Image (cartoon, rainbow, N blue to C red; front, side, top):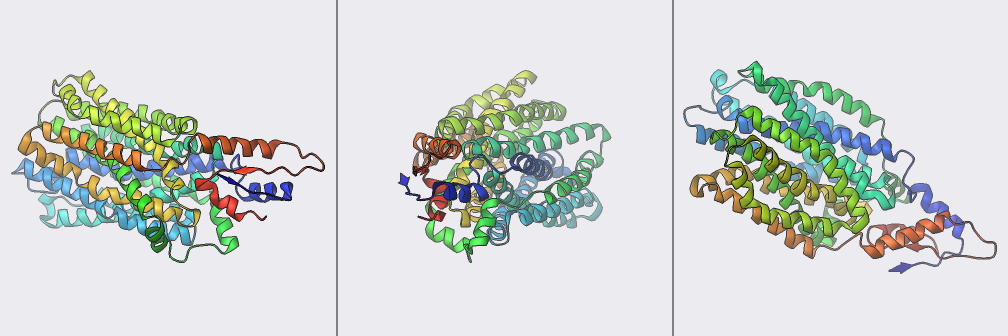
Length: 477
C-alpha cells in the first residue's frame, strides 16, 4: 500500500479534489445518464441488426431456396460487424487518449446513425441480386467501426467523472444503456411485425434517425473527462497509447479479452442463436421470442445497475466469479427449458441467460476494465481488450448453428458453458482492483477530505493503490 507524506495537507487535498474530487465531479450524474443514452442508441442500432439477421435477413438478402444456408450467411454478415469492432476500438481508443473522450463519443454516434438508417433503405436480393448482401456487408462494417469506438469513450467518461467509491454503480448506469437499447430494438421489431414484407425490418432501422438526433444533442453538452484534462495540462498525454498498452499492459489486455468473451459470446449463444433456434424448430412464434427477450431486457436494465453497485460493496472479482460459474452450470438446462416450447419457460430462460448470466458480467466490466490500465492509456487498453472479443462473439452464432447441425442442441449448449468456463478461469487470474484494502483506503481518504484541519498538525492522507496510483504520483511531496 502507498502512504505519502504531504507537508501541506490542505493544498494537496485541494489540488487532487480540483481535478478529480473523491465524490465525483458536479456533472457526474449528467455524464452517467448522457453516456447511458448514447449507449442505448448505439445498442439499438447494432443489436437491432442481430435481431433482423436472426429473423429476416436470411430471406431478404440471400437466396430463399435453402433456409439453413441463408441463416448461416445471415449470421456471417452479422459476424463481419463484430470482426471490425477491434479496429474501431483501436481507432476510438487512440483518439480518446490523444484528443479526448468527448469527440469520440459524438463521432461514433453520428457514424452509427448514418449506417443504421442506410440499412433500412437497402434493396433486397430479389431486387438487385448479389449486390444486396454486398451492400449489407459494407454498411455493417461501418456499424462495427462505430460501435467499436463507442464503448471505451462512454465508459471512460462516466468512470472518470464518477465518485471513487461508486464507480461500479455509475458505470453500471452507462452499461444499463445496452439492455435499454436491446429492449427498444426488439420492441420496434415486435411492433413492426404486422407491417409484413420488408417493412417489418426496415421501419426499426429508419426509426433510428430520431434517436440519433436526440443522442447527438445530449452528448454535445457533456463536459470532457477531468482526468484527460489533467493529463493534457501536465503534458502527460501518451504519444502512442496503443504501443504503450501492448508493451506494458499486454497481460491485462489478454485477461480482459477472456473476461469479455464469456459475456458477449455467451449472449451470442443464449440470445442471438436462440432466437433463430426457437423459430427454426417451431418452438415459438417470432412475437413470443421477441416478447421474451423484451422482458429479459427490461429486467436487465435494473439488474445491470444492481450488479455494478454490488461490486462497490464486495469487489469486482466475486461478482464475476458468480456470473461465470452460473454460465458453466446453465448451458444444458437452458436448452432443456426451451425445448418444451412453453411460453413462460422460454421467458424464464431468457431472463436467466440475460439478466443473471450476461448482466452480472457486463455490470462489472464498466469499472473493472478501466481500473486495470493507467489513465493515459486507459481508453486504448479498455477498448482494445473489450472489442477484440467481438471477433469471437461475432461469429459465435455461426459456430453455434454449425454445431447444432452436427450435434443437435447439445452442441451450442456445451459451447455456452465453455465460454463460461473461460471467463471463470480469467476472473481467477485477473487482479482485484477494488478489494477490501482498496475500499478501506479510499474510505479513510474520504474521511481525511471531510475532516477539519487542526492547527499545528499535518495528517498524512492515504491514497489507494491500483487505478488511483496516478493521483498519488501526481501529488507533490
